[in-house]
Length: 164
Image 1 (cartoon, rainbow, N blue to C red):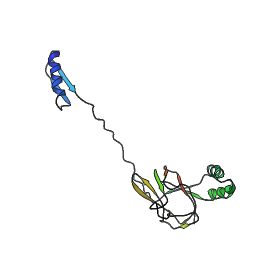
Image 2: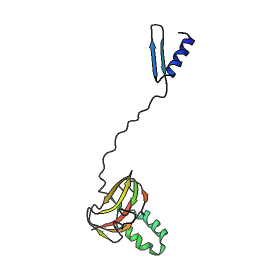
Image 3: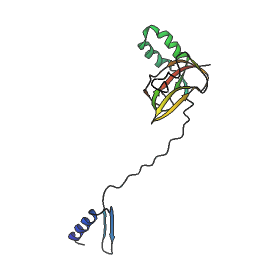
Image 4: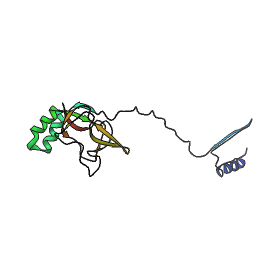
């Protein structure tokens, strides 16, 4: 096949919606491909998580003490005692923390309140899904660590609690 025939063949392929043309004879093999080859990315789906049971961990006293002391120097000893004696309820997902079910509604919990197992403590919105975070056990709320409508990461402390 000469260059003139090859140019004519390329022009015919580009004027149509054909994306690939292949011609094979005993002397020659011609392959014409148009456009980009689509890339397919395959990922394993993440394991399902139960969002009603948040994780509890001991509050790190070394990290909590300087932050509290810088925020309120007069009440620093009391705040350090709260962080040392309580457990931390961490966010099970990445999202936005909401203390109440609606902007004009009362918050689910307040500092000093005793909550029962299964009671809703807050909402963490992730991808337009409202995930209710429930108490895993009967406990007293010692501190609310996040402000309303604040972004949270996986494992961020939401509350400091005292198990009862």
